[in-house]
Image (tube, rainbow, N blue to C red; front, side, top):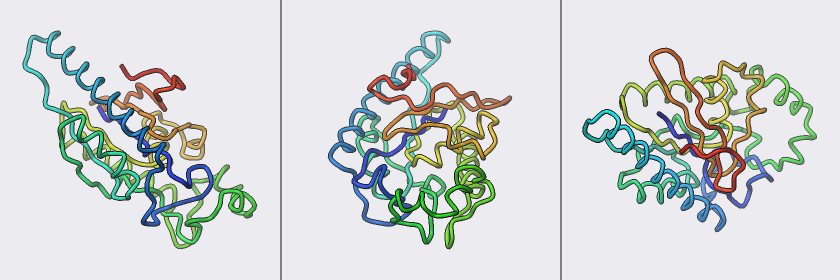
Length: 219
């Protein structure tokens, strides 16, 4: 099981395309969101472990593991989760934000006026940001990360702190949804998205679960 967590709110959330630019920290509201997400994840993983142990009459499963994108906003979101779970943060480059290249730092209102914006919305599978990454490449690395987590941590819960678009494309892949439709999936700051990876096929259990009831709790 993988719990995908989007980082908390930053000063540019909903206003700019931050891409991979360094130095972007969480806003105060984002730090509060991260603490709430950490408490929810700790409660959920404790509940799951206890339930499985009682049902099977076996010893408790191994504790969760925690991965995060290398950017500051994801590392800061992961910090209270690590404290709540009693584990270390493992940095994974495949969880990093989409590389928006020459568009990095562009205000969204300006981006929407560019002729390429229509392609990004209707045909993202055919678009690559100038000097940056394509949506296809982003999805490939996210799927590779999920496969690696499953291989490296059989039977464990993996918490992965990432960004909105990488989480969206991971969900689209798990659902069997074409990449060109991935932006129809909502991923809010510090929301939890839960995917169970089995031998047959992924099963999406929860998408965009937040503490304010915008989606159902993973528990």
